[in-house]
Image (tube, rainbow, N blue to C red; front, side, top):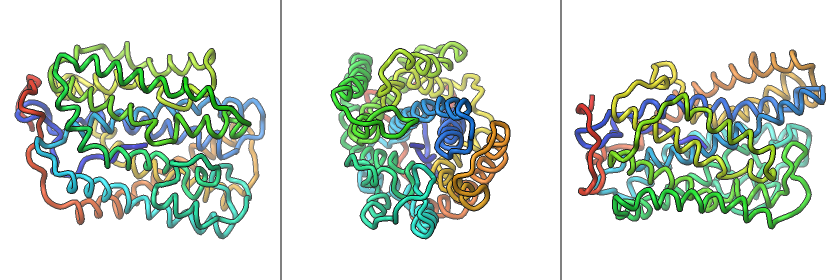
Amino acid sequence: MLHPSPARGSSMSTPGSSPDRLRSLTGIRAFAALAVFLPHALSVSGVFAGSAARKAADATIPLATSSVTLFFVLSGLVLTWSAPTRLDANAFRRRRLVRIFPAHLTVWTLAVPLIAGYGISAQMLTVSGPLKPGPALADLFLLQAWYPRYDLMTAVNPVTWSLACELLFYLAFPLLLTLVRRIPRHRLWHCTALTTGIGLSVPCLTLLLDGPDFMPSVPVSLEQLWAPYMFPPSRLPEFVLGMLLARIVMEGMWRPLRLRWILPLPFTAIATLAVLPPVFAFGPYFAAPVAVIIAELASRDARRAPSPLRGRALVFLGDRAFAFYLVHYVVIMYTRHFILGPGTRYGTWAGLGWVFLAFLPLSCAAAWLLHRYVEKPAVDRFSTGRLPHPGLHRRTRQVPGPPPA
């Protein structure tokens, strides 16, 4: 899931040390949101008629699953980075709920008439049975990821399962922050390695589950998809990993790396899926490679080192990435049904044309509207009051650098 960007006026720096905002992490969210969009537009939408094109489209699915891991790790790092020394747990949770629920409710309201009125299946974009009230309400209140049931996982707006995970993260964050801040400095790397190992154990244990394939392009059973990928507690290690990395960077313990060496790491991990069981494509297998990238970008922003992801255009897109993530699937559903026609398939070039000349620009336009008229006004209206100046525990070593801008 995409972590919503911080409220205007909130700081993301340690006192007197690092920039007011981790702009590179905002910029990378634009690429990650696009990586989630592509498999939905190319594979799930079913626009391609040729079998070769469909197989190539299915091959993009790991782009989305690895990007979800990136968002979870990024969420833990950003929230820890921006947390005040004394966190008001109730105020924190209120702010996070204000960030996700108004936009989520808006998109949910747009999706329900299409599914209920036209019998469109949210997962396969084909005709299905009537929308059931139970799964629809579970999707609305972000409870759909807590039980492995097909109609729950595919109800209304399927991408919101990651919001159910984020909701758990937000509820647990005040306690987790207290625990992470109590870790001695010399134990941080040990805890980081342990947390990464715990995350990797999840898909390994999932191999014990079995059953028929979830769908042709997802060669794992329903339980194997749900347990490591959608079940909120299974994704908690990735969030905690981000929290630990925030402390490592803020303590000045991160050694700078060359981006050209680390940016290919997630793609290398995707390539290794060819020799691994399919279940590893759906879970925290990508946590370590994306964590290295996120920590390096945060370190570069803290040190004011050069970063290709800090440009104004990328930050602009990254600020709207959460809205894009929420709305793009519903836009594809509407476009597929009312413009292309349900069940119609196209040749490779025509299908790509629909994806990049219809699905993508319409999703971007809808995201801009959602951010401009729902997400931002809700935050400005209900997320009132400035937090105390952020910082870590008094034992934290500050990262050297100029004062905040």
